[in-house]
Image (cartoon, rainbow, N blue to C red; front, side, top):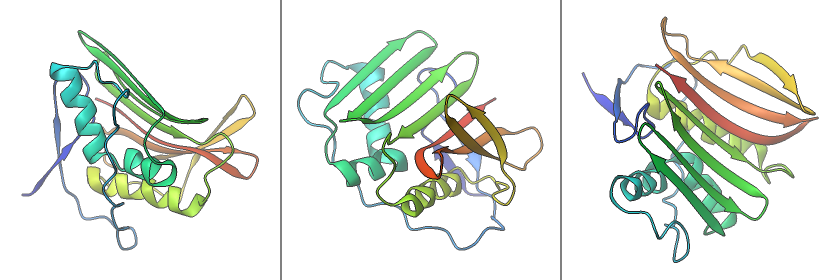
Amino acid sequence: MRWTLWVGCCAVGCAHRVPEVASPEPAPVAAPAPAPAPTSGACDEATGEGAAWRDAVVAESGFYGFAAGLWGEPTSCHLAWSEGEARLGFAWGEASLTVEHLPPETSVTLLRAPGGFPDAEAARAVLRAEAERVGLPVEWAQAEVQAGDGEQAQVYWATEEGTNLSYREVLQGDVLVGIGESIAL
C-alpha cells in the first residue's frame, strides 16, 4: 500500500498519513509549478515547529503554489503558534490564504480572491488536485449549498464512510471568490 503525507494536521506538530485511493473522477490535474518561498519580512520571526510548518505549507500546498503563481511573493504573512493550535495567513493585496489547525483535530484551508480569481477553472483545478493529493474519493457531482453574508458555498464531501473531509467553492453571484478544504478527525 502506498501512502500520501498530508501537510495539514489536527494538532500542532503532527502529520496524518492517508492511504491513496483510486479516484473514479477524470484524469488528475497536473500539479502547479513550485512556488517561490516568501522572502524577508514574511513570517521571518518563526522558529522551530512554527517555521517548519510554515515551510511545509509553502513547499507542498497547492493553494499556496497557485496563489504565488498568480500574485508573486506574499506581501505579508502572519503565524500564530500555541499549544494545540496554529494559524498561518498570507496576503497578496486583497487576496489571502489562511491555514488553521484547531483542537480537537480540525484543519481548515481557505484561499480567497475577493474580486474573483483571474481564471476560475484553474482555481477549481487546484481544488481537485488537492483532493487527489489527499487521496480520498470526493463526490464532485453533488454539492451541498451553504449561503450567508452575500456568498454561497458549494461544499463537496469525501465519500468514504466516517470521513469528515470537504472541499468548497465560494461564490459571490457567479464569481468564484474562494476555494478551500476542511478536515476533522
